[in-house]
Amino acid sequence: MEQRALIDRSFDDRYSRDARDSLDELRHNFIITDPSIPGHPIVFASLDFLKMTGYTRHEVLGRSGSMFQGPRTSRRSVMEIREAVREERNAQVVLLNYRKDGTPFWMLFRVCPVFSRDGGAVVHFVAVQVPLQGKGLSQDGSGSRDFGFGCCRKEVCSDSLTELGRVCSLNQVLERDVRELESEEPCEASDDEKTSAVTAMDNIFSVLTHYSEWTGRLVCRKRCSFPDVGLLSTSLIISLGRIKQSFVLTNPHLPDMPIVYASDAFLKLTGYARDEVLGRNCRILGGTNTDTSTLHLIRESIKTEQPCTVRILNYSNRKDRSSFWNFLHISPVRDASGKVAYFVGVQIEDDNNNDDRNRKCLSPERRQLSVVGVVKVAVRSLSAGSSKS
Image 1: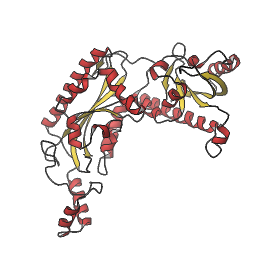
Image 2: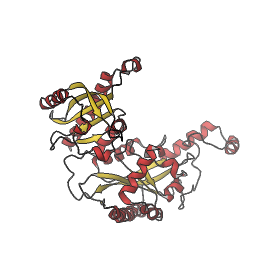
Image 3: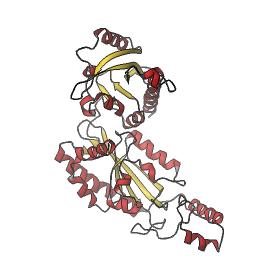
Image 4: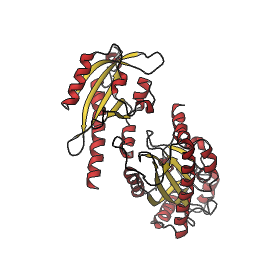
């Protein structure tokens, strides 16, 4: 339920609910994804897209776009798409995807970032899919010929197998269809299909920009301003979203060292919503009985750019403003040049049962260091890639 609420807010808070009906009136195959949510899930899928793939909206929302890939999907094309997402730019590739029943089909895949007009951050990605005619699909999106069973994920009809058995064995059928697919690569999109992709993207952005004006959270197709210094890149947000532990990332180069990223586990632990945390200092977790000497140790570690581990009394943002003991580890995170880019703070609630509960698991210290290691690799990799480009 929490995931579904997050998916709904991602779309409705930005465009208003009326945008869904207008997008459904467009006769295009497309999805909208949110890179700020862990897993970069789908938050909207058009009716024509659902008809083309055979999935229901409930089956698609919250899932990654990789659910449509299969054994013959080009890894190189997928990497091109991922690279475009990382660099927050447009991309267009020809891709072999799969319907729910396992039937493969060729399509022209065009992806474009959606930027916030205020600040320049990427808030969504729009991905348009144009079926390629003569490549396993008819004009209405249905199968124009049988692709065979080579890529059908073993979802085959027993009657068809009986008929095929009169001619050849199943292994021969599989080998034949693999050869057919290989012989059709590389697959090219026609000028009309490329034009259709551009037109679809134009129409979709027309709807998104219009309904974003209703909420006051305007979006645009091209970055209207340079991103705020505190904003994280899409690629880094996606990488950090895979970490399941409670942690925050703070930026020491901004006034008052604000939080620029907070994990879902942190929000669950503290009771804060993401928009209540981002841009604020970690002091929001402090309270009446928070030890000032412990706060001094934290400030010193930040000043000297050294890691430290403390046990500190923090307070949640729940109605009762309940307190909890926080086993906190803080560490500097350096970029590829060796300069401190962020500080990461990893929280583990200390309820005096950690030793017993984790006797057969990783200790709190090991769990914290594991998070720090993953964050450091993500930041360094991103900064190294940026410096080369």
